[in-house]
Amino acid sequence: MKGKQKIAFLSDIHGNLQALEAVLKVLDRMEIRRIVCLGDIVGYGAEPEACVRLIQKRCLQAVQGNHEAAILSSHIPSHYRTEVRESLSQHRGLLTEHSLRYLASLPLCLKHPFFTAAHGSPRRPRSFEYVTEKESARRYLAEPEVMPVSFCGHTHRAAVWMMEGDWVEPLPPSDFRIRPHARYLVDVGSVGQPRDRDPRACAVIYDPAGRTVEFLRVEYDIAQAARTILDRGGQPSFAERLHEGI
Image (cartoon, rainbow, N blue to C red; front, side, top):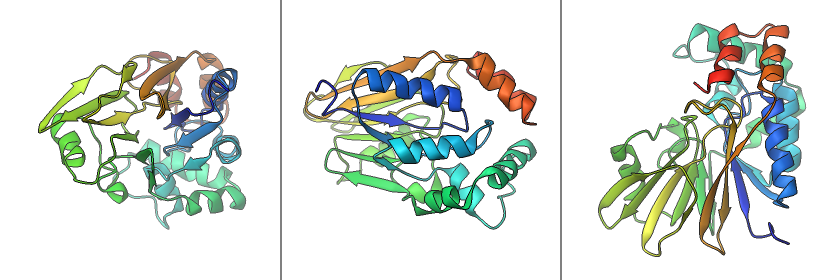
């Protein structure tokens, strides 16, 4: 019963099955059954189909990320770097029709009685806006109908932005209790490709009843994930960065 009211948020899995399975095992031990995925299940890593199937099986809800949107478009947008376009094209070929239909069915934003969530900023979810500084957080948190707690991913860097009155400030990406009159935008980091120099998989656990947010860091077999990328013809840089969390 200890995890019954809690909700886990995962984002930016990026085909990293080893990281995803490690996080899910920890959530199982914590008896957390309500899981929400904030997109970018595919891209970069070696096992997109297995990751999509596992997210579909285990997640209560999910949203589309920019990598899903790119794979589902008729042409992968030219603004992606060449190696990223190649990765997305490879992943498109690896995904079954079943998985492609699932990705196409996902919304861009979730509005729940306890939270709002999107891949990038929930302000304009179709634009996949990055929230990396105070003003981008303010543009979202200042909107009149914003929930007390919202969640996003996209940057691959765990972060917390808090607004009280007209004041917005960044908080450390660590466990906190929700203040009664504050609004928060929580970047849940990345499961499969963290870029905050901590290579462990990252996820967030929200307890709406207890009014707490907890950051979870999980060790996984990075060496195996990197080898699998190389064995399946992926970019060496995608494998190397896993070790450093960059």
